[in-house]
Length: 174
Image (cartoon, rainbow, N blue to C red; front, top):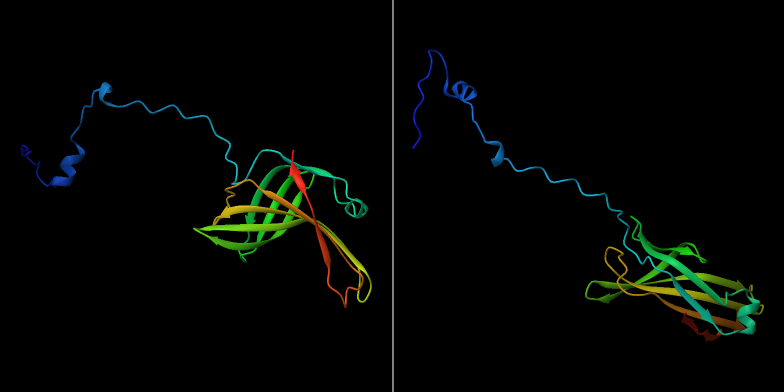
């Protein structure tokens, strides 16, 4: 129960509340916690070095395909137009367009060609050397598994009239 306080002449109940004081003992007021040290917040991605190497391959070497390379960080950048890019730092640095495929359970794979040497024009012989990096990611673009690398070398005797003969070049993690 609360005790009624008498009001002065012309004073409203709200005005009387302004004059009420509350004494709170200092021990009852908790101390503010110490601010924590600022933490560096990194965008989603892998922040450890991954290195790959391959055995000598005469035709891949001729196209300038690296025999080994390291990448120090991987990130996926999603653009408002729904395109996705693999952003790499390291010996193969840059932002590479990705082909994204839904694989289920809210997960996607994204594959980017991080090296490509294509030679050939209409109705001539041609060659194609490519290194692809694939990452598994969620809908926000957060990488959820270690990346994989696949590489190929292809040749054709006539770009216009024949198919390409591709050979996989195996890179292994070191």
